Length: 81
View (cartoon, rainbow, N blue to C red):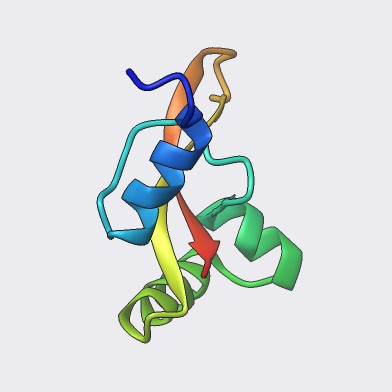
């Protein structure tokens, strides 16, 4: 790979192009995090996040975190554009 372009720049270009990746997106929020922030039921939070994606205001991505069983897993998450 070209040493002049960092991995982060490649990943940003992929996200900008609408290509999803399985990397950890620290700027993204999970449905549960969004629901807790705005004190919404999970279903309402999920619906609002999907509407943001449909309107081009957010992108669906992935974020790593701990499951309730203590395992590191990848969650669906959303990041504002």
